[in-house]
Length: 239
Ligand SMILES: Cc1cc2nc3c(=O)[nH]c(=O)nc-3n(C[C@H](O)[C@H](O)[C@H](O)COP(=O)(O)OP(=O)(O)OC[C@H]3O[C@@H](n4cnc5c(N)ncnc54)[C@H](O)[C@@H]3O)c2cc1C
Image (cartoon, rainbow, N blue to C red):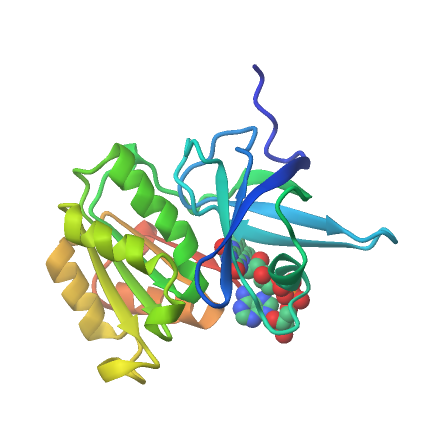
């Protein structure tokens, strides 16, 4: 069977909606027509009855080939046009226009490691796909996820990530809570980067995802810490 072109819009039906955190919901769709690499995203397009269209990008949270289909995790933003639709209106059975997979922010088993993943807030979503991909196809690859989020309740897939770091040899999780507990007010800093590199080894690949400011700061810290710029890939979700 011919694979669907990633640039072509196609209808995808929402198969399941599950709350992931108080502000984030997980949406399961039918599998994409084309295989994706962990870390890539799709574009989603909504069309109002009067023809008005809104288009946004959402990272794929599921590992390639997940038999449960394609998972997106969408955070509700105040006044958010598209995230507000997904939060309050979208229902199981609805059909949404999707195209993809898109992007070079991607890691696959054959790329090897060590792999350093650094995410802020919902920026963890594409990194989650990489963690899942590693578990399925490359459990020998050392991987460390440094995840900065306001509170434990807001941490996406906290239970899964914690269990993986406990059960999967070679995968480590450092969760930084910036508005709760003893690390309140702390941001990812040079000490945290150095500690991560000490634990993981010098990364062969680094992936940084989050807000513009988060990504800029973290990428600079990585370069300061001696990580080769050519090995650092970044994805910016917006403000
Ligand atoms: C490659 C890529 C992948 C992405 N993956 C995800 C994902 O997996 N999950 C997810 O929830 N989002 C993701 N985003 C962000 C997403 O595309 C939208 O920008 C977000 O959902 C806001 O759209 P909206 O229509 O709800 O808000 P809008 O109506 O566009 O904006 C509403 C308000 O929110 C502000 N705003 C817009 N975007 C952001 C933002 N990213 N952060 C903070 N404030 C913002 C606006 O300034 C405005 O005040 C991704 C973005 C990119 C570029």
